[in-house]
Image (cartoon, rainbow, N blue to C red; front, side, top):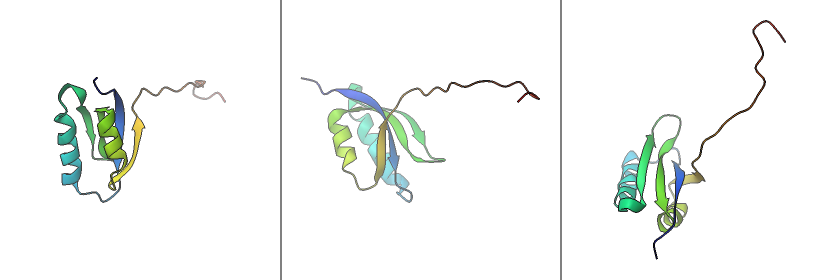
Length: 87
């Protein structure tokens, strides 16, 4: 039975050496069709967006260098647009 997979953003703690992040990204890519890095973040936060199989997700969740992991998804906002000069 194949592992389940999902899309996540993996964020590392400030000061994590880049080679550790790169190694983790390479480990994800080695998962073949079950894992893929979609984007690497180097400004604002350290980490990457990836498709991760459940077994990799649980391993990353226990890693001392990872600050948090959250599901990746589209974010939308709803609000009222106010024309300039009207309030």
